[in-house]
Length: 99
Image (tube, rainbow, N blue to C red; front, side, top):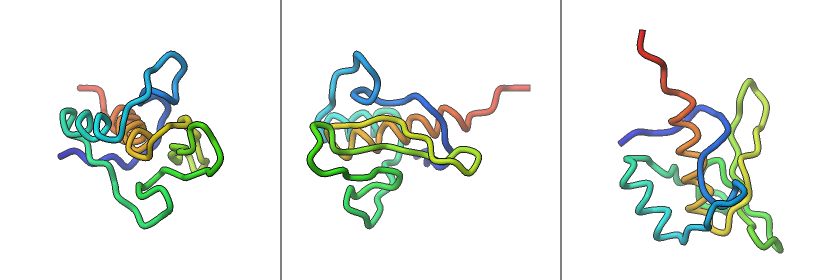
């Protein structure tokens, strides 16, 4: 499986305008289909790069670090969807063009 670590913008559904929200199960299935690993963490959201903000309609925020700065990727209805956005973004920005 590919592991996602570096930062960038882009990625998942509900954080971007016009995208349909994914359920937790749909996000896990999509991650598996795309051979992505949702990095589990010991925080309130349960995933690395995902923060829980209580009282929001979409309470899970996905973020990465780029150039030492925190980059916000969007707000999501489920922690798995936010983690999928982060993993997708990280893989997309770490691929190198062929020489």
